[in-house]
Image 1 (cartoon, chains in turn red, purple):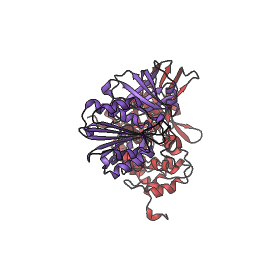
Image 2 (cartoon, each protein chain N blue to C red; image 1 turned 60 degrees about the vertical axis):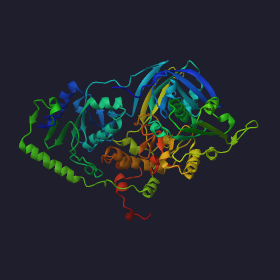
Image 3 (spheres, rainbow over the protein chains, first blue to last red; image 1 turned 90 degrees about the vertical axis):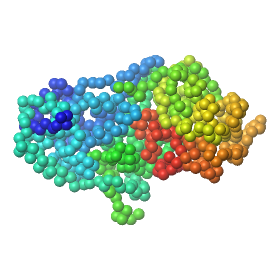
Image 4 (cartoon, each protein chain N blue to C red; image 1 turned 120 degrees about the vertical axis):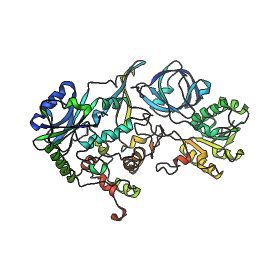
Length: 336
Length: 267
């Protein structure tokens, strides 16, 4: 019974009413347009701020689970206080694209395990995800080849654009989130239309990454030459998990905090030992590490690749490094 | 939910200057559970945290770390005295495969501060008495750089424990061996099923592994500890990734066989 799916519809002009209802009991994180076209996830103060018309957000919602920087503890004199892992108000992540929901399931594997990361896992447990299926995927999207797609994902609720209304699929556990007068039972025609829309959207995704390919060191070496080492790909990646840990203190060192912040395997200091030895001294070593980690090491450990096909790294790379081209590369196509 | 990132307070019970840049710190509480080959994360609040191998054996109900002055955390630690506090968490890492040493001849080859994690296993095995013979081959740059000098006599007096020490560069009053530590392998008569445990700087490991291979040590009988940049110690932060392995949770102890074929492993 637990996994039965409730099918409902909501008129587009009622979406704000729905979000307002949700905001009564939850902190709602939703897409907000900033400037002319860039959309980011924000904790919203008003349902009016929510943007439902976007291809994908500049950054994935990862930072609401694994913030760019977060406090681990504070200290004063000779005592520390665990101030970092408090459970806040229950949250809803509204409007996350299926690829980014998939990204969270990839992070789960890393932050769970023999040791649990309480900061990440408490936020994850405390958050219900309402995913917004894609109707107009971007030319760089390749999610379909990675086990999800523009609609399918592991969200608690998935909503799909049917033109003048949204189709809602909710797990029975989350029935209270869709139990409002403005949300009606879906008619058989709605289900059919949703299937048509899903198929249309899936057909728009033409890029595919080839899985289980052997990485070619020589090819990676050549591709790494144009890399600037800026780390942008890791910064915008919904599946990158690496972090640095630092202490910050007043000059007296009597009072301060320990925090962690995102780090990047593309930076020279990432593998630098205190004694001065750098185990990934060359830029090409670091460039290779990113691909090997995502497409070899992680899959060997968890059975799936550490990439969701969102296309962000391809879109944003200042020197046009394209993950799909690099992985799909065939020696026969190349001169070296 | 338990927070594995939170360290707890430990008091420095004693400080011993081993060499000009290595000090051994005895820490309390000593009820910290650990096995030979494991490490702890040591914090100096306001400075940071660093992974440090444990040098004592839990069989002696003490907790000791021997630390070379290298970076910020070790630098700050060296400033501290008995009675001061540090913060620790752990113990982490796989530790040495203890079952591999039972009833065996064990050849320890250490270079410089690399003797620190080996000492934990040496004293553990001595206390458990379940070994055939222990050879300790130890080298340092100069006589001044030898750590645990006070323990040399203790080890030499134990039945079936044999210690050989060498230095790269002797002094006028040095009467011992001069030369690389690998050369000490010629001084001992090793059983064909002996197990070796090697720890030291990368260049030393490189040559000692070659020497051991020429003595027909199979890859699974060459055990070493790996060092990588490390932050969290619990398999999350990604820094100590070496090929598909994480030094913090899959290591730091590996056999040569474990690492062969690992694309980031070089010796």
